[in-house]
Image (tube, rainbow, N blue to C red; front, side, top):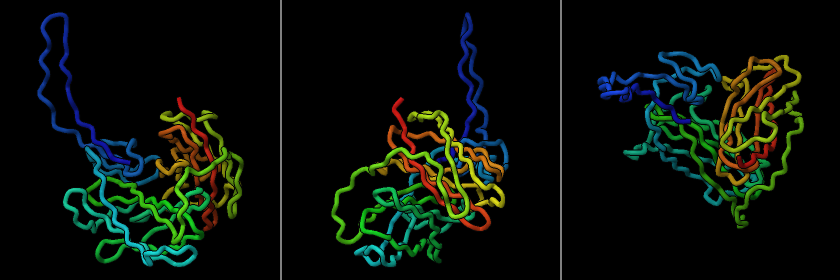
Length: 290
């Protein structure tokens, strides 16, 4: 998710005789890139062709911010209300960050999954006067939960940071989720979504096209500024990817281009909105070693 900047350079050229002297370096080029899709770049202000966000001046090196989490009650009961408070701290100074860039109509995207990858939630904590974010949440059943926090500190780079919660009394050691490959068509609240992979068996480190077909396609609407949102999480919780369509026009076909980092099985949730209703369905994609 980190943005990158391009800096022009001239290499030393060698001919048949003496080397040609390299020219003095030119002034650094200022590139603009998308906070969510950094491969989309421009030499000037523009809009991302994938997700529609405004491109921002690229940042040369991403830095990981610190995320503090306070949970009340601390005992973390299952099935009862919790209050989660997130505080983002600057990586160098440790100071509380108070300013954030809006990403897809929100300042903070919070994903929650459980250890079996059967539970999924996409929430949006509310910012407070001091810059912290508060989220009321109910964890539906005993277990271990992974919190995937997605936000963009002003002046920094987009962040995806992780926290883990275990409900009170749950002492079973964490194990990777037992996921069987599942590409069957799924039925949401008011539509169905099918999935086709190209290649049919994805390889780690190589691009995979996830082609979704939505039916019915009438009355599809933008959901948080995109035609769909996708979260992919590996069965061992190590990898997580939040993405938006590379190709989508509000019609029945949507395409995501993903690079799965490792040979694992990934639970993939896609969210699309039709007639004011958000549909969430899940698939399991097996990824092989190249």
